[in-house]
Amino acid sequence: MNYRTATVLSQESATTAATKTIDLEGYDPFSRLTVRFEGMNNGHVQTGHPALQVSKIEIVEGSEVLMSLSGMQAQALDFYDTGRPRPYEIDYRNDLPNQEIFNLNFGRWLWDPELAFDPRKFQNPQLKITHNKALGGSAPDAANLSVYGDLFDKKSVSPSGWLMAKNWYSYTPTASAYTEFDLPKDHILRKILIQDYVATYSFTDLIDEIRIDEENLKVRPIDLGGFEFINLFMNQFPLFHETISWWAPGASTYNLFITPGEYAYVALGQVGAANTAYLATEGAGGKTTVTTDSAEVFRSIVTGYMPHGCLPIPFGIQSDPTDWYDITTIQKLRMRLHAPGTSAGTVNVVLQQLRRY
Image 1 (tube, rainbow, N blue to C red):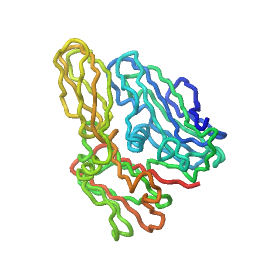
Image 2 (cartoon, helix red, strand yellow):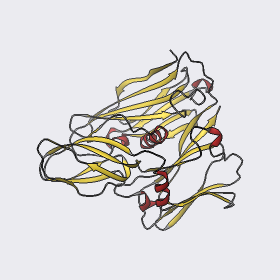
Image 3 (cartoon, rainbow, N blue to C red):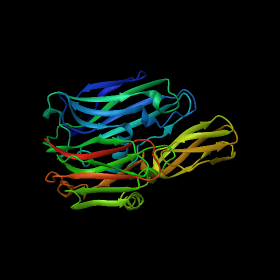
Image 4 (cartoon, rainbow, N blue to C red):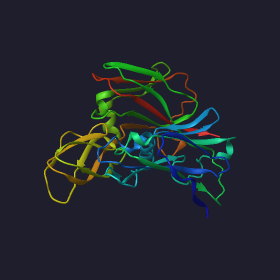
């Protein structure tokens, strides 16, 4: 068998918030690592999106960080790399599990022989997962964690490197102000994600200008308004879609935490008797609200763009490493983001780079 899927961590309790460390030493090259987190809901009132339960996924070797993403960033990057949303339904109902899948893709596609994470190239590589069930779902009272790896088995490969992704820079935006920072120039850039995830705020409420410049403004590879950038990228990536099961205990207005952060549409999909229910607010920033006139069960279809508030900036043909953004010979490389009249939340800048062995 050329390939196999191995259990890296058998399912274990993750009820207590912690950082789980798993040794990766001795494994064959990974094409993908999959973290699965399952929180058991204890009620119907939604705490937050279930992806928030995993706040950080890292691969480290000693003090060096080789990969570092939040659970939300991992899901967004996976979508932009593969074009596929996660293969499961979010469930916010009492005594039912909310299941989250977080994929770390090390190649351009599954079983990419040229790009894969090879633990044999390191002394003591470790996977670290920071989790807290209380941050998402519907107030879970128990949780489980497991990890799986898609490995090259009998197929002998010698990957030249892997796709390394890190949350590079974070800041709190200031209304009507620019934030400027240097970008690293050590590895070729494949993709940048800009994340502004604040409930009920759209992306352009927090960022309305994006610029990258080389050599003190000598070259400007990117210089666009946030709204223009969103419209341009929508032609390159598919619509994100998901289903959500949840229950409204009575006549009231309820939060509904969703994955799309921009232009979200929610088809409520009532189960049982047709009672009155309507969207009280538009879906933006991963949240909408629903008003009902009685206790009702819903299976909702949600569509939209920018999962978890992440805007992608892809460089070149994504399947061709020679076409990506080679920044290694640039002396000065900067990014500048502008906030309009709103100051809220945290903006994160994630870099996906080609890391050679």
